Image (cartoon, rainbow, N blue to C red; front, side, top):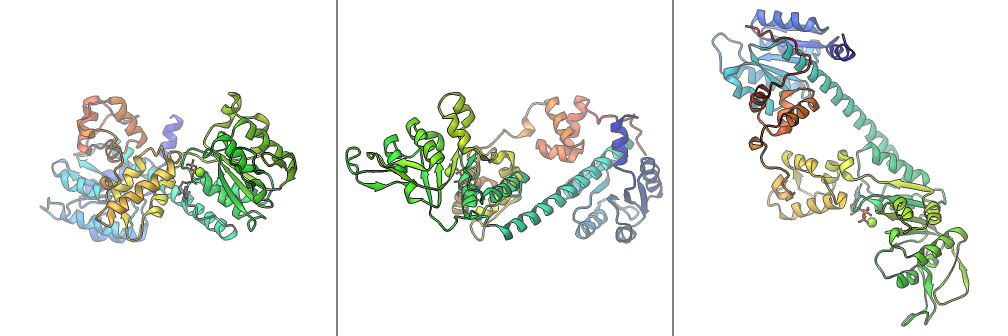
Length: 464
Ligand SMILES: Nc1ncnc2c1ncn2[C@@H]1O[C@H](COP(=O)(O)OP(=O)(O)OP(=O)(O)O)[C@@H](O)[C@H]1O
Ligand SMILES: [Mg+2]
């Protein structure tokens, strides 16, 4: 037996599976099959008994029939049972057993939250794989839920101890960054914040400032990309009257910010002379106003931000290496929003205006989008949708996100794409079908045509 075989087998071992079917033969068949893989199978002949066992045995998964009374074929008893179980255990995987001729009801229930369905007669290997995958998936989801809960607790604790300036996140990556920002806030060293456009660099800078020992001192922000070179140097260091045409005497930001924090945004735009002056003031605290020989002193904490890869800029000779090392003593690198998808929905909900919420398809559309403009783009999309949507619940068309692909049903058969989706879904066909935008039957038809089968599926032994 290979490692994967034994690893896969263990997914069933020690797990309790409740089979609710009026046919004793069916219950026995599942008992024999699933016990062989280490599962404990409990059987119920009626919905009422099934519900009793659900309370008593706490199963990890349920396999349920759709018809229980003699002659019943419309599945109403199965639907009622399914709803009852869902009401009691919203997350429990339920596999529906149904005649292939009555698939529609099962498909509807899968949409309503059943985990999967199987046609009668079933195929042993498929049963084992489906059950195993659903148990794996359930375990993975439980783990993810526990992790999220843990993170929320950690986030709440951080919020009690520090000023978090309204930052919203759920991802581990952002949590680590925010922790770092609060930890380095007290040190006097410069902080360099990097990250793509609109990813939240300024929010992070605010957190550093708000938790520093100089939080009550001046906090000024300068956008180094906003002005031509000479004016920028005047802005930073001040001018004497007549230093250049039309110049009046004024103090610069470094002077105004003495004892406080200076946020230098779009750092990479600073000219070479500006870089030299910045390096000097960082090293010695000394600078001169434009048009003056008199050295002045200032002491302010610098937080710099850029969306440019400064290492590359240094290699290309566009940014001073000594200044780079001076500034990046502490570097906080914000990932793209696309690389921290867990943050998308919490941020989207945060940006909704009061009285609005998001439909399930809108949430899916937000999760699918690649967000080249990061959090700012998400903020704009949600604000626009709130303004334009006539309904309180925003549906995906109101988001006006670019349509990704043509409808998948019409897409040509691509075996590799289908196999990838199946593997990603651990061969849970319903899940892969959802991802591919196909109906489950359509996916089965394609799998059949392409000869795609679950890995290590032994010869099919259909049951009567
Ligand atoms: N994690 C977050 N939680 C809440 N709001 C956020 C978060 N990240 C960004 N924002 C909001 O998104 C917008 C863009 O963020 P910010 O200005 O900090 O990005 P930036 O990286 O400085 O952008 P740019 O590269 O354009 O300067 C702001 O309105 C900010 O308040
Ligand atoms: Mg910014």
